[in-house]
Image 1 (cartoon, rainbow, N blue to C red):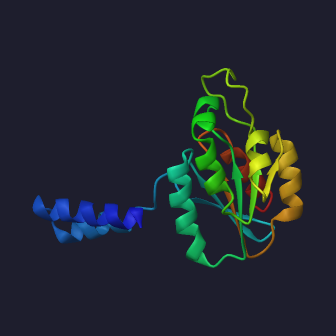
Image 2 (image 1 turned 120 degrees about the horizontal axis):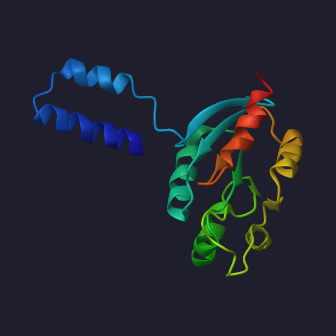
Length: 175
C-alpha cells in the first residue's frame, strides 16, 4: 500500500508538471521496488524468501500488515535487532510486533557503532515472545531453518544489519 500511495503521488506530481502520461506510465512500469524493502530473494525448501530492512517496530508492523493477507501457510521471521540502545528503548514494541509471526527467529543484535552498555541481548526478547527462538549465530539459524522452512511458508529476513546474507545463502542453494 505504501508503494501504491507513492506511485499515486508521483503520478500526480508528474501530471502537475506537464509530463506526458506515456512517460509516467513507462516509468511506473519499470519500477520493481526498493532494495531491501520486501525484496524477493527466491525460494528455499519451497518457501518464498523475502528480505526487508525494517529495524523499528513501526516498520515491522507495516511489513507484517502487508504480509498477513497474502495467504501463506506460515509467516517465519528471522529478525536481527539493530543497535543495543534501540532494542532497549523500544523493547516492548518489538515484543508486540515479533509475537505476530507464526515463528520468530532472533539473531543477535547488530551492534553497528555501539558497545553493549545496556547489557541487552536478543535472548532477552526471546524470553518475552512465546513463538520465538534465539540462536546467536547465522550458522545455527541456517541449520534450524533447513528443517523448518516448507512449501507454503514465507520466510522473511528482517533488520538493518547483515541478516539479509542468511536468506541469500539459503536461496543460493536452490540455484
